Length: 131
Image: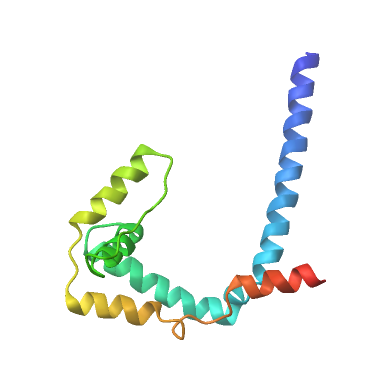
């Protein structure tokens, strides 16, 4: 009985800690410029366009991104990191994703720095460090 109570108390403590950590992370994200509502609404549209193209190509968004890198030329080689065989297989699957010139142009237009709204998080992190 005592063991059960300790486990139950531990679980409540763990849940409390996780709740605090999640709230802290959410508060930090809300302060990041790219996650402010006005920027998030715009950037979500770009995210949905990438997902739609990936769905059309029958691949994941990550495979689409790797395929785009593969199409940059023979002198460019992506080096995606992973610790799971499943993800390695998905990365290898990107080699079979073929992109047209129009699709490459669409992806490049979506990924231009001026297409994404909100400053990068590095600027905000420097600001937090100065507080």
